[in-house]
Length: 215
Image (tube, rainbow, N blue to C red; front, side, top):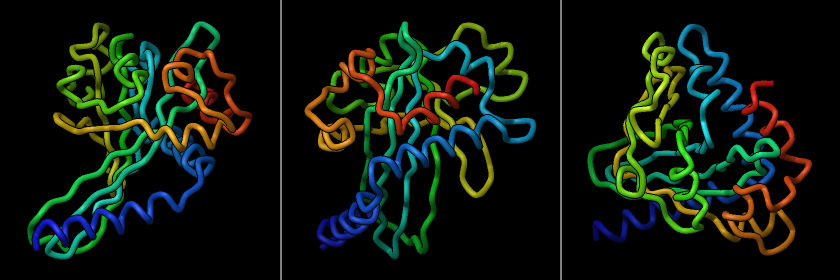
């Protein structure tokens, strides 16, 4: 019974998530990065973004009444020799059990600090944070400015109810959404080709690539 209801919760959340078009997700990701970068005092640190090899921007909806579930969707972009790549679509989800009532939306920015972290997302399957690449809560404030050499392959940040913090996502699983990639690019494409800049970025991703580039 527990498994059945948990599955139903996740199914309902997933249906709500996929109702957004790929362009909607790109546009929302653009807004998320812009908000993270411009939050007073403790925005997404410029020093961290300046040295990032890639970013994953994910919006997660968590809801429940006794049974709980969460579903998330977003994109990954990577820095290439020609600038930022087009977006590769990703998703995450899960189920839980407990006395939880209500819903909450949390925005995550996952900073990929090295090429190995980008390759983990480029392989086109699931990435388990902490297993496929080391992960840590991203530094904020003065700690971020002093953190010239990243202490982990991946830094994670979140914003919920207006609060911005570095948060650990150890064990979180993020998977490539191959069908979404194919729809957005209008043909079969791989995450590897997208993130390595071998696929031309659609015009609809121009604002996202501009904002992650600091414009």
